[in-house]
Length: 383
Image (spheres, rainbow, N blue to C red):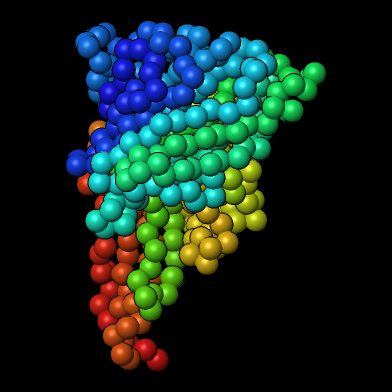
């Protein structure tokens, strides 16, 4: 991914995945220089590695700053309003290579012109003030100017901004652009360090830690497998590996999210977790550890997901008894040993083989960024 040294209307940001490319700039911006806040190398353009790196363009818009954070293979974009603006929308000029764009439920999806598969995505925009009051009342307009060229406009809620209770600065968080390079997104938050940014760590903390206090973890698989035609779900589980050396392990709850405005968990903190909503009726409760693994039964969630009754927004993991004086560490998707990272296991019966059932298992992690399909029980005869 690349970022220009100065603000401009076109090709300010360039992201690539193989032959695919999306670039964009902004209308009515000041040509201010960006400041790299966590990368040592500065060249003609900011060509960023796949680590967490932040670039800030001060006074990019009138009374507003623009911040990009490159997080692994995602781009996090924040427009920071330091006062009530005299405008009510943000306009983007977008160019693509071998990709077409469409609006889906206020998200912008870029898909391969050859295969039709999604390659990049701009998540649904929202904004919050310094008291973490939240607003998602945006109008999203995508217009095709010509082949591979688009104009995107986010019209935000000016009345909400002008409310006397609003506390500035206000952050407009319109884009979290995902590249298909890592299938797992995870993070954790802690009450004693409520503003701490823990994204990219090799561990997640749950329970009452002596440094972070009461802590909760969040995990999302960016793409979940659907079953083949004739496939019948039998069970599904989310498997989490405890850190080596763990001597205690309180029971946990795994709770599906019913909304996730960010799409990814990069910038969540203790206060911002309140933005999420949950399906507590689909939670896996009081999950006990076995041989350093938590194996949470998420079958009911997966049934609802396959039936289209809940989206793929991720899971919250917390101690069942959060008053318990205990904590645990869980390996994340950033840990070097792939077999210790979070895994979703989906078991199903393939009934297409006439009078026989085949039972298959999806071991779904980020190894090679693909689904592993493993037949583990041969041809169970239909009774």
